[in-house]
Every structure is written in C-alpha cells, then in structure tokens.
Image (tube, rainbow, N blue to C red; front, side, top):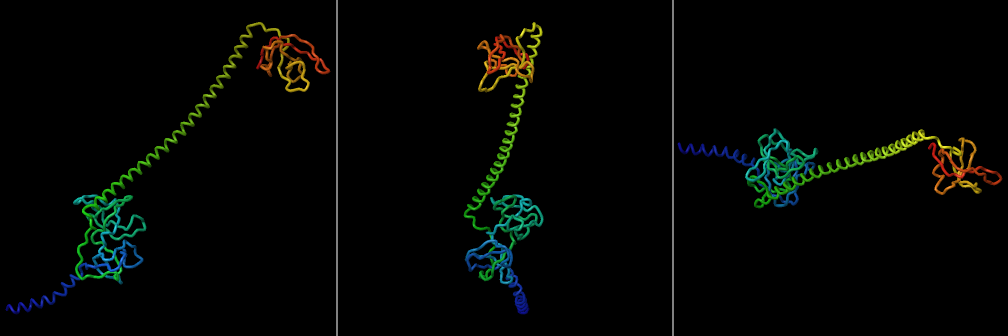
Length: 334
C-alpha cells in the first residue's frame, strides 16, 4: 500500500513540477547591464521617451520581453510627476510620502502638456515625494510601474530579481539634502512672491506720486489765477474809489486833456518828448515836455490825462508847434 502511494506521489510531483517552474519563470529575473549609458524608455521602441540612462553593471528586474526589448521594473532613479491636487502629504518613518486622494490619477514624465503619462495610481495608494514645482510633486516610480530597455544590453543572471528599493540614502543624507532643497525652494518662491508684491506697491506709489504732482500743478494754476483776479479786482476797486473821491471834489482846471503818446525814434526830434491827442485818431494838438524832472511822462503813455502847464510856441523844422511845459499831470482814464 505504501509503495503504491509513493508511486502516485512521485507521479503527481512529476506532473506538478513544470507548473511550479513556469510560475517561477513568471517572477522578475535579475539582469545586469553590459553596456554603458543604456537608455531606459517608456515603451519598446526608440520613438518612446527616454526616462534616464544607466551605467554598465547596473542591475535591473526583468519582467518580460517584446520585440527585442526587455520590460523591466521602473528604476527607482527615474523621476516622475503627479498633480498636487490629488495628493495629501503624510510622514512615514521620517520620509515625506503622498497619499492619493483621487481615482485613476495620471503619473507623468514631466509637468508639461506634451509629457507622457506612464501610469495611474488610485485612491489610498502612496508615493514617495522628493520635490515640488509649480503645483506638482516630484516622486519616485510607484510600485508596479514598468519601463523598457534594449535586450542586447542586458544579461540575465538566472536568479529572481531582488525587490527594488529606493536608491541608497547615504545614511539619511539624501533625505536631509532633499528637505533642505525643498525648504530653499519654498523660501525662494516666498521671496519671489514678496518681490512681486513690492513691485506692485512701488508701481502704485509711482502712480500716486504722478497723481499728486498733477493735483499740485492744478492747485498752483488755481492759486496763480486767484492772485491775478485778486489784483485785477483790487485795481478796479481803487479806480472806482478814485472816481468816487474825484466826484466829491471840484474838477481841477486843466490846460489840456487828451491821450499821451511818444515819438519813437526820429532823426529830427521835436523840442518835446511826447505828444497829446485831444481827439483820438486826429493829429496831435499839443506837444509835451516836463517842466520838472520829477515828472516822467513815460508813466502816462496811452492814458487819458489832464495836463496843467504853460503853453509855449517852439520851432520844429519849418513849422511852429505848441508845447506844454507840464507842471502837473493827472490820469483821467487808464
């Protein structure tokens, strides 16, 4: 009986062994790069985007093969991007992680529209955050993400690939530097925001200064107009006051009345300095000269005056003119 069971057991193992071997064959295989600067791409073709280049001797986990290309577990050195809108920051063992808050969130090779979507993560998945930029998180490849490289640069070692881990941290130095870089970047972003705010305030200040200068200019013009009008009103008031005062006194007796004018420059000037037009538009009736040096007839040009003085006859060329030696002159009208 025991012998029969042994034979059955051996036969069962013989039948089962190929399936066990096949299951083992489906596990990632360890591979080592035989070439230098081997390119890792998003797909099995040279048209696909290059994710990074690996050095000779680097080990990779090979999952499958297609058209001369190995599908490998995406190396941890690859940098991917995910929108901040679907990530909540959490801490795990001192490392900064991101918990996915949305369903089927795209993971990209960059933050531009043309960058490639290399996979998706679902709500509750966690990703390793290594930086930020313009509303995006820079992350390590999530578990299960794959890439491709040419099979001619990979040698399979035959064993099962070791579970991929994050790149060596250098005794915690990488996390320290990444945190410091993130802090510096946040400080730079804050300073840039503050700079823009200061530029806005400076622009507003300049605009207000221009507005103030314009208001001051207008105020100065108003003040000048006010002073001019005030002077005109005061002069008119004085003239009215003078007329009123003159109306209360007997009108003085003048030798002559009229408008004063000068000769300008003449080659043969008359024996007088000014002329007196009794009627506007007619010939001068009298000629004037001061009997006293204190009387400056230029002060009465083009004004209607009353003149008191002695009339004498003087020769001027071939004609005789009447000259008044002015001893008093009053302004009757400006």
